[in-house]
Image (cartoon, rainbow, N blue to C red; front, side, top):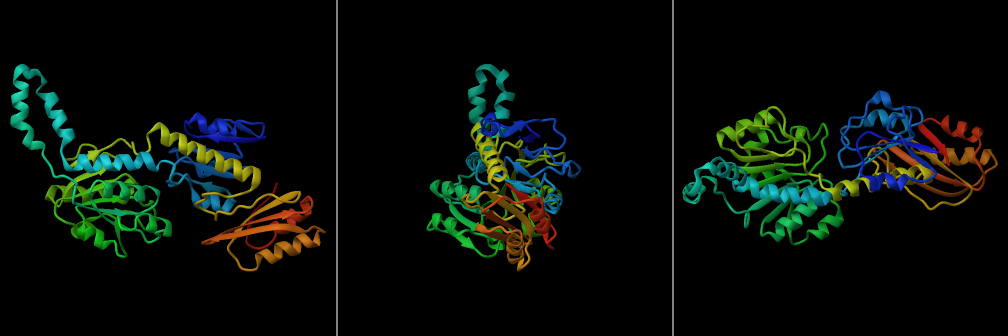
Length: 387
């Protein structure tokens, strides 16, 4: 039986998919076979020798020590697109509340509730203080056209906005889906210079840290409205607050408030509600659980962020799953080792991703400890499993 440890409350519909004789959910296990997590931080010291994989019920994985996992041959999965509907809807709502001071207006009305019969007249007199522009006909810049950004582009276009998108890794599927609905630019500065609204939909990495800063803001239109439901670290808070104070930025909507932004003028702080819908939580839990099951039972890798995705229908008696460095010629070395043990490979699949690679080999017989040891000793091999 394989033990799966959950570090957050995971939607039951997801954990139920692991509820069979092969899996046991144990929140207290110190050395599990798999970890299922949402936003909790995974301690590098908790990566036990048995741990095969970590599945994140969500898209971002900055709470998981990727380098340490890769070194240990622990496959890390995420759930791309599973929460895209919930986040997309909050982006559309953010466009509206960034334009018209609906929140401030509601708070003001509540403040005059004790005025009795005077309230209607006071409302008519004071409503102009909360007016703002329509989004129809304005230009929305979307930085990152993955599962969420592409859906935002579709809905913004349907609402009458002009859409401009930037994504250096734009897929052909998204390009075709948004053909005639969005203008794609090769330089992100085109977004900064030409858009009334800018929304961020890219992962947090060293390259994207503080991508919105004093320099990039200086390129933008006066009165630009910026939405960040992706990661707080994408925006330099001090530069953003200075831009709001100067009037360069009219509104900043963030789903990641902190001590600097929670009560700042011009900031609309949302308490990390992007994926906080029952549908999103269910979808993420289901996808993460299925990734764990497929990897542990069949060795197939789907939606990994530190190893390539690779899968193959089962054949033969035994399957080898080899996680390795991306070095040429290693497959031949594996096949030589298999032949030396008197076995035959009846099916193979191999994929690479950056510095890592994964090889699946189905055997006509059972793999013994001798074969596992020989393959493990090949330079560049990180981990070998026999299923």
